Length: 173
Image (cartoon, rainbow, N blue to C red; front, top):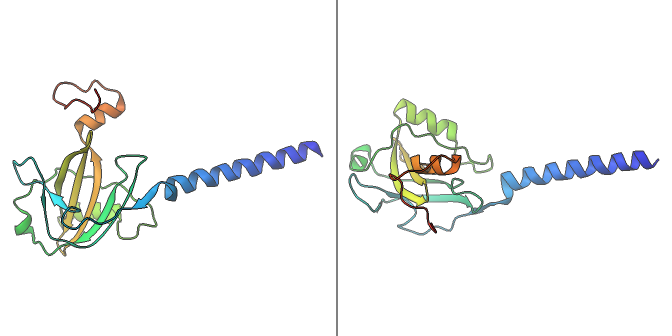
């Protein structure tokens, strides 16, 4: 009887731990980002240091303090591809996935739109966090998506490779 009770306790504990970890990864750490009109969607003009805001509506974003690359956002804009031509394009952007409950953002569909030319990706801001850039993609029909991606310095810093002189010093170093 004691063995059965112990086995039941272990199985229930393992199941609860699994459910808890799943919840924390998919739901627990995320929060809605409060919109800051005029600051939420910015693009970097070719050769500029500071990003410039673009007009947008229907902004919705999530983020998590547990990782600098968990930021995801959706918006709409009336800017055309001609209007966007002045901004710095991003080569080979790879949209990161979002939790399934964040309905407006579908990384697979965004990647397909980028690959087919139905969307363009631009640099939103460099080093929004150390080694992390903000990428903004805009489709031909005016839908926009934002995510964070590791840049070269971030990839080196987080995989343990020597960062080198081409990267800025880490904050606090």
